[in-house]
Image (cartoon, rainbow, N blue to C red; front, side, top):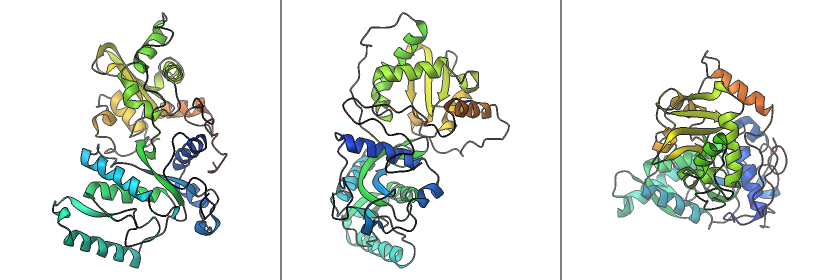
Length: 357
């Protein structure tokens, strides 16, 4: 416990069962609307009470419009590490007015007086951002970073309402247009099913996807899932409900399907990507539509996020896909079934625990 009474302040220990649950709750909480999230923070002074629905980790993601460069990855990891070395927890505060003016003034002075900022695309980034604690002179020091990354980190703070008490910072990834904490893969994976390849054609196709290159590339998007469990999900999406409403062609010899916020692609001939892929799209339902209508696999190519969100009710044939998918899950149900990570606490049920539904 910290002096404010908040448990687990500091870097996330991904070997801790307690923190596994906290991360899962955080990621579900991030999917709520701004008003729902704000309601849990309103009227509280978290640094004094140190408890409640408005306490937890912070996901730190790269820019959403494109893939980050190697330098930006290094800068982002440095930002996370140095933020976690400051006094925690840190409260989300409003920065408009004199605080923002003072923070900007100090950043300009730092850039002007330090030759490390000679590159025109490099700015002096606050560590952590001024919004975390309200200190114009950053307690974690200044960090040279790209203009794009600095803007992205500042913009992501808006997902946390004023009053949120950050217990630590962790690397994140964009999943269905939401910046969530990226849990390390539970296993390096295998290239062959433990029981061998199935003689059933449908199951074998699902296995070919999961046990191919897709697992190494996307396993972190399915925290706690074994390859066997993911095979069952792929089988359900490929051959279960919703049926034709959520399916489209993928090139001359392939198909793409959508369900539970997951995209599954399958080609009938293997290539450098194997027989297909299973992943949570960075750009959500938009990405499925682009693929089904002949576009590129945006999150794979790093170009996701440029299109406007899908507008249901415009009379598109894809409206029925969303309706069917939501009906199948039922109101208030999670997008994916809760899965227990081997040797860890069960994944939390939405609506229970630290962050209410």
